[in-house]
Each structure stands twice: as C-alpha cells, then as structure tokens.
Image 1 (cartoon, rainbow, N blue to C red):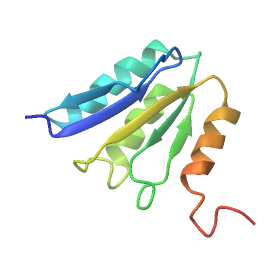
Image 2 (image 1 turned 180 degrees about the vertical axis):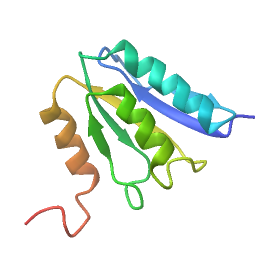
Image 3 (image 1 turned 90 degrees about the horizontal axis):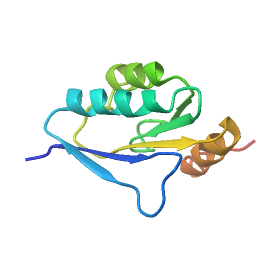
Image 4 (image 1 turned 120 degrees about the horizontal axis):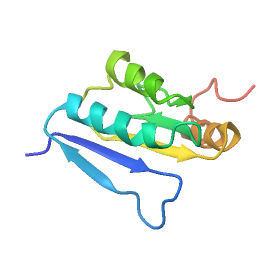
Length: 108
C-alpha cells in the first residue's frame, strides 16, 4: 500500500507528469532529493502541496527542498506532493503565483 504520492515533473518532461508512490514520507523525501540532485545547477524547483494551507516554495538548491519537505508543517500529510523543475526563477515564480491567485494577498 502506497500512502504518499509524489508528482515529479523534470525539465525534459514530455507528456503527463509521472506519479510515484511511497510507503513512508521519508522514502518520498529521499527520492525527491536524489531526483532533484540530478538537476542541480540546471533547474529551479517549485515544491507544492495543498495551496490553501502550505504555500508553494521555489529554490534552485535541492537541499532546501529536503529542509522544506521535512520541516514545514503539513508537508508530511498523506496528500499529494508536487515538485516541478523549471529553467528559470521567472518561470517557477509565474506558476507559484498562479497557484495562490485566490489569496487576497496575491496582488496589490
């Protein structure tokens, strides 16, 4: 039985985003760190969970992803985790902004 779901879109993605299942959240974190490390210095990462309770996170450092996943309250819940790779901060921030558009603090 897989309790934790990861949707990981790498830079070279063609087609649908692959979904990976894990028995423990720690397995999900380790897999994510390994996969993101392959794109170190090539990609900007957008990490998201549920956009109402956990804000999206953008970084170019895979080790910050690990910290965010393990330390941010709510990240270990048994709901889907999303990691997407982008070629620039500009692209990643545009997507992150679209994720929180319903928030009254989104625009001035």
